[in-house]
Length: 370
Ligand SMILES: *[C@@H]1O[C@H](CO)[C@@H](O)[C@H](O)[C@H]1NC(C)=O
Ligand SMILES: *[C@@H]1O[C@H](CO)[C@@H](O)[C@H](O)[C@H]1NC(C)=O
Image (cartoon, rainbow, N blue to C red; front, side):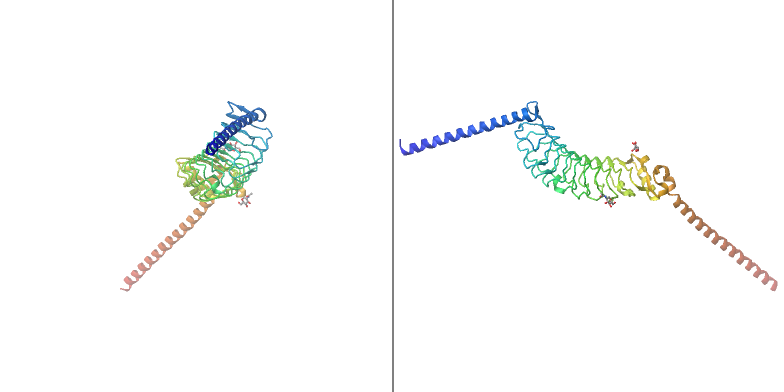
């Protein structure tokens, strides 16, 4: 054998041995993953429909198990003790559409936790202890249509964290600890139709908080701490059909806030606020009731906190009296003006008569002298 042939043979041998090693490795990996998923499906979770549906509910799992079948379409990990979601936990689950992580004691979500879940449509993380979302939270979630984060400990939403949720239609952030909404928090959610923010601690609703939500139909802000709403806060919401503001700290509102809703029809809920009932408020509510595109759903339940004489009374029952003081004032002023005018007229008439008499007397005198 020539040295070159030997060399070639050696090369070929090495080549084939490498190839076979790779093949073996591939089979091994494939086999392992099969074994992994069958082990997972046998001992840890319940798998249905050829492992499309994987039920790992309430298994006392402290981390997301390995060996999840690659074709998993629905994965339920609710009721476990996961504590945190690490980076790339769900890598490779390209088929996943529904992921349930509710009631799993999750406190922390690391960056890239949902990496590669680009087809996920529904994510339920309700009833955990999540206090913040990583800035890149939404990066892989551009197919997500429903995100449930209710009953957590979220304090604020830092703007880019939701930005990539361009397919999102329903966002539940109720029962959290949110105090403020930065302008632009919901930027990018161009398909959002339902936004649940009730039972938080929002205080002031600022302009820009709800900008760029062109198809938002439902905005629930009840049971917050809202005492002030900036005039144009809801103006960009052209599709809003229901605005819930019940159970807040509103004493007064400007009519313009609602007039600025350029919609074909919006239902309002305003009961359960400590309304300070005066003539101004009466006017605001009368206008709301008279504008065709606004519907006040709970007017019968709108009650006064102030003044103390009216505490607990329904605004609907007392509203005709609220402007009475003002009416009385107007009457008194009108009366005073009338009296003055009449007085002036009488004096003028009196003067005129006196003058006429004076002339007459003068004329008589003249005549007598002649
Ligand atoms: C609720 O709002 C009031 C001001 O209107 C504020 O003093 C109070 O601290 C707020 N409560 C919470 C828990 O944020
Ligand atoms: C008014 O309040 C009562 C009692 O709190 C409740 O049962 C009813 O559903 C409320 N009505 C409206 C229209 O909100």
